[in-house]
Image (cartoon, rainbow over all chains, first blue to last red):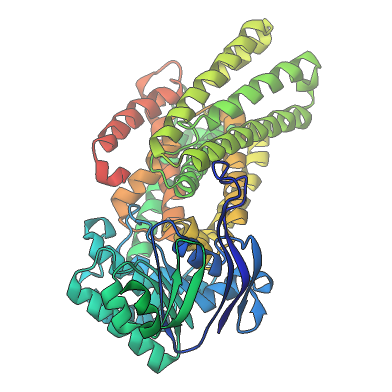
Length: 238
Length: 330
């Protein structure tokens, strides 16, 4: 379970001198439970990506706390976080001979020995993630040779291979075709139900999002938020 | 995958051993194995050729490893100690150190003199690496980082020129010879300093394989994979600065090896696995400089050419070729 308590998110003043305070969103108080598929919606620049990066520890909260299963994120080591939360970012990855297999296998890094050698069980998990995302045939392809949609799937497969109880996906449907979007939400839903994972998905594809998620966190332009069942939040977009 | 790795290591290690052996017999004095009975030939062999071959092996391996680490840290395939001005930083500080050592007569005390020069080179390399890292964080553009590195190299070169202009005749001679880059001026005593430092860093770098694999994605993903990115960045900077600094202190600035060898390894061995790439770079770097030094000896019968002539003649066209291969440069 993830709890956000009086959470202020944004960038420290030094990093963003152009903004007066660097605060992107304030006073977030939300609880995400096990087995829930959660949608994160709001306009561009409202703070969806910032929130997801703050929950993974990539950004420090400006104020307030994040609790993971009752433990404050500050007190959890980076290694422990990596075994609990995985993220799919919007950043484009490429070059350096990286193949689809290499990237998906990087999801196993938190579990590997000092030299980063994959064990048989790790390879099995990677293969399973590749199959689940329909990438098995592209396994040996260089990431640079793939379309944006395929790249997106590779990063999602990496996140699956990390096998964390919490998965955060930042606009995972951005480059996907309609069928792939439907498949993605089907897998996500299945993982929430069967493996009791907590999955948060930010997206601008409101139609498909509201159809599939259990709850929605809506970051509004007036810097307030609403959180609740998908059907209830949908009324704000009517 | 593992079999291919072992086979590649075997091929590279054999090539290194072969080039090392050939290099031992290349020089202004020609002799064969049988001539080692002659005390003066044996003296040349043990006091000049062996340290020279070992220096070429170590310098090539160290610069290639430094290049690989920098290219991964900056996520820039054109990064390297020479191109980004890190060798120039080391050179400037070495020039200052040589002048001070000569002025205070510390050159007579071997370890004091060499230690001051080595530490100065490391400090120079470290300072430039930190400046480049700062610019890389600010700009994020590979080309900007590269251009700033080249400009920085010019500025540091100008300062070095000024120091050389003001230097005494003795110091000037030392600068000029050292600045051409050579693996021929080291002694067995010098190896006693270089070998343990490089050996420890080569071995330590193997333990960076896992975090480097994560860093290939990007810093945010690496952090999410449990890597302490700030600590990793500092470790890489220290290792590259010490490797570049110590090699520059003893051999002068050596061009292109640090940049070209890691790229060649990526093109030849087609793997992103950084454990494999570290080993490949160390071995191919050693092969490259042993080969270049042997060519230097071959092209001239009476004296050995500065090694930078050959590394630049081979390295520059290779880099131009790579610039046109945009996919490799990402």
